[in-house]
Amino acid sequence: MDLEDGGRWTSLVLGGREWLWSGPGLVSGPRTGHSAFTDAGGLDECFPTVRGTPDHGGLWNQVWASDGEWESARWDEAVLYRRMNGDENSIAVDYKLVALAGYRFVWAAHALLDCAVGASVEVPAGTGCRLYPDAGPWVEGSWSTALGTYGPTDGTAVGAVLSSSSASVRDRGLELTFDLSCPGQPVSTALWRNLGGFPDGAPYRSLGVEPMLGRVFGLDEAGPGDAAVVPAGGVLAWRLVVSARSVGSPR
Image 1: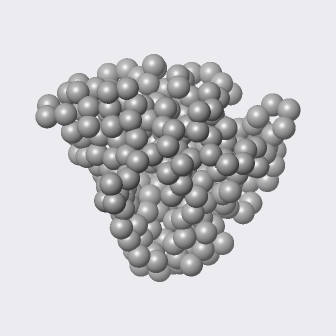
Image 2: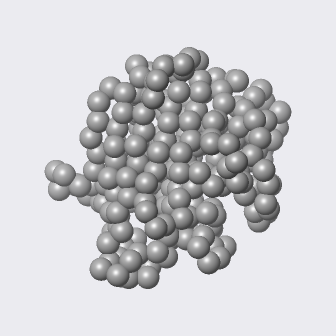
């Protein structure tokens, strides 16, 4: 974790390999104080929105604090805390948000992964899908193996929000699984599959698999049930478990 660079995860070694993509080299050093989001790779904590204002949330461009147990950052009147523990094959990350009861938000663990051509994203059968074609609003779609395949460069880029609290990535004989738990809240998984279609002028490749609270990328587009809501008492807690195994081994 780099607390100086928005609390960004810079490394995730599970199952004997590094999973996080190091980014396209667009920036060096912390992004503290930057006004426009710059893709540095790794995993950014997006809160209180992913798309919209502020783009990728308001935590990536500030220094995080640590009290030795919890790491934290503030946005407006809300404070996001996290702590983690784990071993060589699995980590558990506990989060809590302290804010006024009724506070609405979208959060995503915006993980960009270092995968080879042919890697695949696996989700449970029957998973619903909201597609974000180009830069427009979402449309109802359907999950397919084609959407979940990290194929050769073809000049496309697509975003989607999947109605699943769990998703796995299979790549070079290993499987990385994200499991998110937050009872009573809308839980999903965001997908960003960029096969050289973004950004205009200087496109690169990236694969994002992003556990999410909420069902839309942008808080400003959230309808009823599309955003997480802080309950009475002013604290909402959730847990993210990330694990790796050899493909074909038991879970």
